Image 1 (tube, protein in one colour):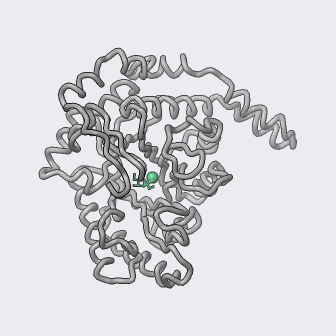
Image 2 (spheres, rainbow, N blue to C red):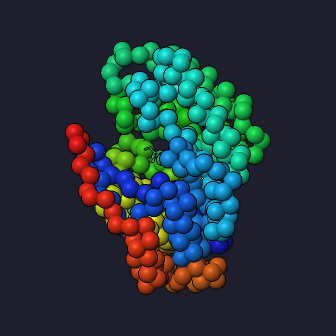
Image 3 (tube, rainbow, N blue to C red):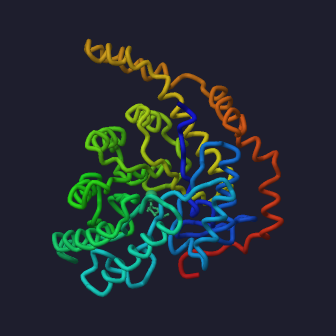
Length: 374
Ligand code: PSV
Ligand code: MN
């Protein structure tokens, strides 16, 4: 069962990233998409559970897609979801597919259609779309008109999807817009998906909820509706913190896996790693996901169902605690070794010399860059 866990790591999680205050580049950080794939391959070599790499365009733009695909396959990986980027161009100041200007919407749709072609060329089976669209002030734009515009644009893209590709729609209630985000929550995303068609599903990013949201319940509802497209794993303490998955709230991660059972959707990591070592952070993230999944598999489902049927409130809760308290490190280590990975991937990475080697080969980091007004 544990061997069925397959995690996509994000190409964008290996390169430099920062906050709006500063970016701290790391020695050996990948200089292009090919080197980002190499880092993803190292994480898979160690964990035996990260066989796919999710890509982000245009960040991962290359001259020759066939060469990128060949490189990915030569490293023993496959292409995960393709993530279009509709949040960096100056044109998108007032939104992309919700923008009041039809010329800007046309540009956004053209990029989405280009990503469908990229995914086809790379053998990917999903578009994973997050929209930064939204407004900052009440009255800034007509909320219903914006919704219609989004739907119209997404319908055009959905119609162009080849049968093997699905459209994953990610929601987020805030940032960069701070009054009304156009796909703000799982309900709005679900409504869009239901209107688009069967191959549209909701993507749940752990950092994209208001404080106190019950993510496992959201997961239960979306799964029951057949619209749970997948996850962006990370952890948050305050907002969209993009911290290592399981680092703040491991019980929440475990509870999500309890809800999923053995029916796993697309599992992707989406983290930033501003000050921690990138490859090690990604390796630890995969290990934490394996750990949570293994614990969820240990839940005695019969005893849980019996306690629930009897109305034994704490008896039922105890069944979850029993599994959560188990130390599964050795079990996961054995499963990893059986699959060709390392018993302790983080220790193995540190011993391997990989990080020192990429620092030598790719060069030292550029000086620390300042943030605002630099
Ligand atoms: C937005 O916060 C997000 O979660 C989306 O998935 C983006 O593609 C990604 O982060 C960019 O880092
Ligand atoms: Mn995300």
